[in-house]
Image 1 (tube, helix red, strand yellow):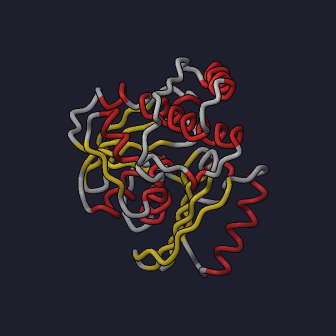
Image 2: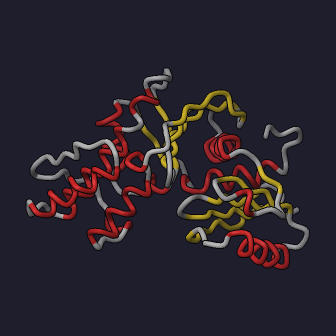
Length: 250
């Protein structure tokens, strides 16, 4: 039996296709505009390619995939996290619009903490900065620290933009500015970490693929941080897995 999970994120949509509980493909694409029309066409294509597939969605745009069954994103993350790692534990997800920490046991969501929606604590802030600086996401490497510390003082992304403009005028390098923005985003997770007893956690979301991110996370959060296989696809994996679980929590 084919099962397909779709995580409709604010910036990217991730897909997981499984056959009898085994992942056969993972892929992502930029989240479209006019989502209802798009996903109606997309799901028809998927069912044609994977006959009789059961499809489940989650994420910000799950309601736009009206022909699909859907589950809560936190529930999907819990299921996907356990499927990939086989471990109970905490997960920090850095999304396009927010930060969240969940605790799961054997794939069941037990606890969660969300930050207030704030662009300065999200991946979208980083993407906007990269666009401003003319950089690509894949070029980021945090293994080297800036020669001179850079701070973004404002906690709001709207006002933080003025800090970035001042740094550009101060002749700071693109790398220094991106490093400061990532530090700003990570620091937004501190209040969430303080609500838990986590000694270690895993990271998911697009920023988990940045080279050197675990070292900076440990430095700023003072918690051991790990990155699992397929860390950007955990929610879509959880959606696909949910079809196989009876009595799933929505």
